[in-house]
Image (cartoon, rainbow, N blue to C red; front, top):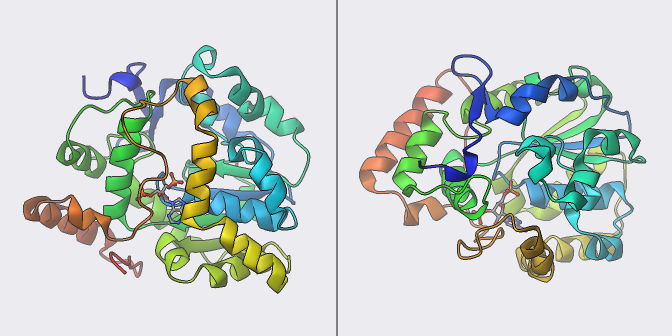
Length: 305
Ligand code: A3P
């Protein structure tokens, strides 16, 4: 079995449709009926597209750039993962996380809520885009495959045992949790002009984070002083976020959800790392997959910086 961690199986909504856990399949309707609020900020992404980075950014903007509080409280507690509670059976979920991510807890959570989701828009509450502020982040599919490969090896609830090439094939076939990739991103791209949607690229965050902070602040109707900007940029640096993770590592170990010999969550934070991983043959197949899926779209990815 190439995904021993996922031995509870996967469900697919429809042929070629979204793939996620059986637990989600049983309870998808609860999420569909979840009530978004006007003062929520949602961070929606395909997995490994810069979600954590953007959650930290959105949380800071929604909370007066309070970097001190951000340092004290783990992100998972500040910004719950909407369908995280459905990754595995509830009884296997660490209690602390469950208490924070369970939908009832989320329903009672005071505003402003900063909610993370990897679900495509069509599986989220239908009134979301006309109710809450949404920040969607996309990352080029080659770096997503590499980053996701490491992620699927790292987390015990995936426990992927195959090679990178196997993983790339599963990704292109839409056989892994949260896939298929292109319908997810293209649907969000088609909604990028909705007033409540801010569509960002991971690569633009890499290139000019200050400009992205300003755009997020404007989207959430907030202003950021120069003093706050300096602190926010320092806090959001790869180095700082990675060390925050190292500090929280003991907690993660206690939860027992990671394979300890499989690396760290903050891996490289680079654009173009795929070049160190793909054979020319695999790269050619991936190029064709991208080209076929982007035919007729004006969406363009930056593959290297
Ligand atoms: P890599 O695996 O390529 O290093 P997500 O949060 O959606 O799971 O995305 C994780 C990816 O975002 C990882 O990519 C991680 O290193 C990267 N990332 C997180 N914080 C970052 C930062 N401050 N700067 C650049 N990349 C960051």
